[in-house]
Image 1 (tube, rainbow, N blue to C red):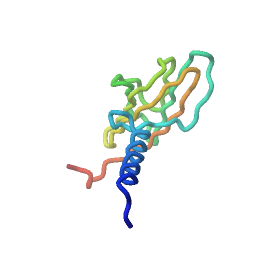
Image 2 (image 1 turned 45 degrees about the horizontal axis):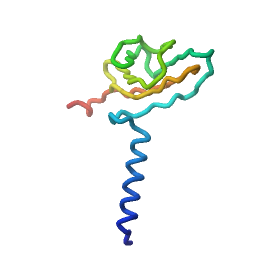
Image 3 (image 1 turned 135 degrees about the vertical axis):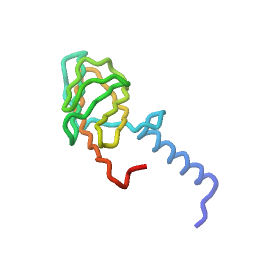
Length: 118
């Protein structure tokens, strides 16, 4: 099967577009909330839950607490969310905080295995 140069470039462009819709400019994946709730005007909230208890949560590099965790009154915009727990792979995502909305996030951590050692 032959494809034209135009079809090749179109497919390449669409592949890149798809990649950038799932990842931020830094290559960190976006995490969408499982559910959202409406809040009073100008309020914001993020609820972080994980499959493991007491996972450390960082927003833009600042420690926020351990899971399960609710963070309120954040400025709207994109945040770098990182979750860490000893013995588990660290995970980093981009999340978006929206005005008058609470975002509920669930993150599944994976335990290190002997085969994962370097």
